[in-house]
Amino acid sequence: MNKKLPNIFKGIVFKNNNQDVSFINKEEENEVDVKKQIKNILNSSEFVYKADTIITLNTGEVLEKTIIGRNNNSLITIDDELIEVNSISRIELV
Image (tube, rainbow, N blue to C red; front, side, top):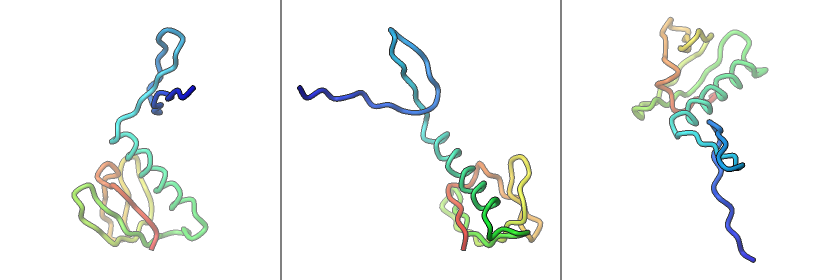
């Protein structure tokens, strides 16, 4: 009795014939991960008023920036630059 279970994805859920099915596309998953990484950095004990980070953009460019805060859709650096959250593929503390 070797039954393979169907692949299950997270995201939008709908019901069909008493079966729950859900999915999420890769871009949404990446956006959720980046937002979680940013939240972890800003809530960490190392973040008092700034955090030294390495930011990898979707273009592959790597930036070393000091983050001092966040508004709705952007990170604010100590150099008074705005970096769009949607353009970030990865962020980590130095």
